[in-house]
Image (tube, rainbow over all chains, first blue to last red; front, side, top):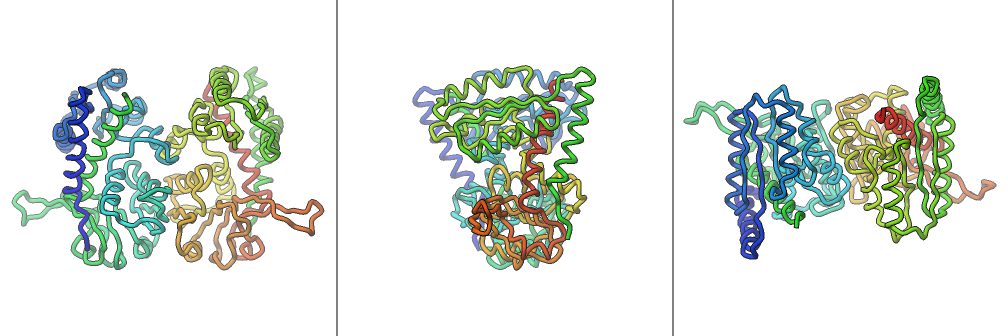
Length: 291
Length: 291
């Protein structure tokens, strides 16, 4: 069993990115610039955004954190987005979700200029991804592809079962893995809450992407020998044995699943760190497109 | 076994559309207007375009057929598209494919204003479809959904196997059938030329959409009892017993498959007529959006 070490891989990619940025600045070019918009003061959101900003600094990107009070109106936020769209020295930006209830997330996401949509959430980017055109890959699926690529995990002709059909992970993952690319060319089954006989379906899979957000859902009994298992879940579960009172659990019961696997991602340190790497790669791509 | 009669269903929908248009014009409103651009003089393309134009007339839409010589340059075609985009009394248009080799189809499709893209081929429409936002459905998958809807074929929790991953049929079909909609909520497996054990995969399917373009590929031995089979293929095959010397064959071997089915589409008269109906529905939707 080989551990797909997202942490080590993300460090490697970050050092590659830092090298590219170093060369850019040595040539007198402006480094990539990412902005992150945070509305309100949700603790988890602040953690995510801070981590993204910190990663930008690590690789030499410029970053701008824009914090707005939860009382911001939808019109004010849309005006901010219009400003960000027109800023010439800003390559890409993200709006950290979720937004307060009085703001229509759909309207906000549609207002983002697709050329600055480094989260890959705008329909134009989703469509480009589906059609195999140049696009910003959504962060989590993009990170998973990169991990499969770096570890040279064989995918062609493999049967991949994706558990979960969210717009940011399950659905794009299912689209990306069936494409005629490397990694890709999988036979892909997308499953969800309405799926029957999920155990049986999983047992047939060469590759399983668990992205349903239920801690330790996937058990060893649902996995065949030699499977590749990608664990996208990350949930805090109570654990009185820990000083903090909790631990981070993935969607995969690692103890029973990992002995059967050819490759498996740990939680934490698997998919998570790779997600931020995709965001950085997208931002560099946006910067290069603005030349 | 129930035949999913696309011809009868398309006639019914056309009469409903004609009624809507009649009421529009009686209120003094402009009827929907579709333009079709045909480049060159490929016989099959001319047949398709003519049939689309004729269908417009049947339901009271205005239609414009724009024929251009195969020698048109890419720049001239892009200029024509810019003109069509800006025409206020034109609701939607289609560029009949394929285009001559000296023209970049990708560039042409990206030039179409997504709000007039009634073929649903532009990435913005593809992305909107994937995200469940309002969009123009691609014609063939849209027609299949409508057929399933009208015949009240149960889809929730069913395992659907899509054979073929083309951008205009297989891939969008796989996305549409997994959505949390009616019809939808299928567990969907998308298969293609790199898929292994396709026979075994098909035998598990409650619903099969055959869209690979290989005449009579799907045999009775690949289908389980009670399956729903949708045949998207339509290929001319030689047949010396016919006066014309050929017959139209689907991707399904009807003689061996149909006895096992709960529902099946015939070829011709199944998916084909439904495809044009989606184009008409999209054009009406485009007209209503311009109010």
